Image (cartoon, rainbow, N blue to C red; front, top):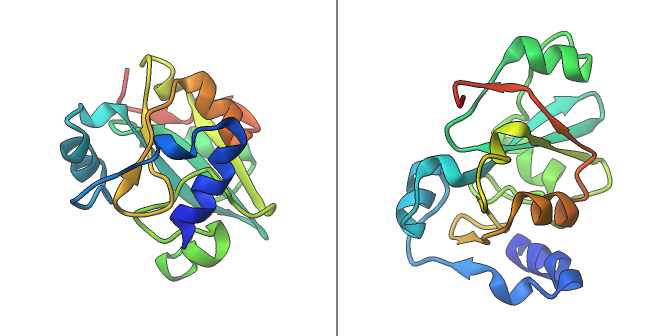
Amino acid sequence: MSIERAKAHLAAWGRDKDVQEHDHSSATVELAAEALGTEACRIAKTLSFLNGERTILLVAAGDARVDSSAFKKRFGVKKVKMVPAEEVETRTGHAVGGVCPFGVPDSVDVYLDESLRRFPTVFPACGSSTSSIELTPEELEEYSAALAWVDVCKDWR
C-alpha cells in the first residue's frame, strides 16, 4: 500500500507516527480541509505532470492554480500535460487522491510552489485518500527532497 510507503519514507525523520488517518475521504482539497478542520488553502495538493520519461510532482497550496505560461517557461515544456489518471499510480507510486511527495520512484522530480510558504504549516497527503500530515514548509522541503521552490501558480496572492 502506498500509505505504508509514505510512512516508511517519513520514518527516516521519526515522523511516520504523525501521519493522520481520517474516517472520511481527504482525496480533494475541499474534503481534506473538512477532514482536518482547516482552510482549503492550507492543503498541500500534489499535482503530477509529464516531462518526457520523467514525472514532475508539484506541491502547491489548495487555493493555487497552475499558471500554464509560468510552468512551460520554468520546466521548458511546450505543453503542460498532467499524468493521465490511469498512469498516476505507476508513475508516482501513489493512487489518485493520495499522491504525495513521499516514497516516490527515482523517476519523479518534486518541486514546491511558493504559494505554500505563506503558512506556518501545511497538510500534504500521505499516500492514501484518507491520510495527511502537518508539516512546516521547511519540513516539507526536507522530507520530500524537493529539487527547488518554484513560482508557477496563480490566484493565491
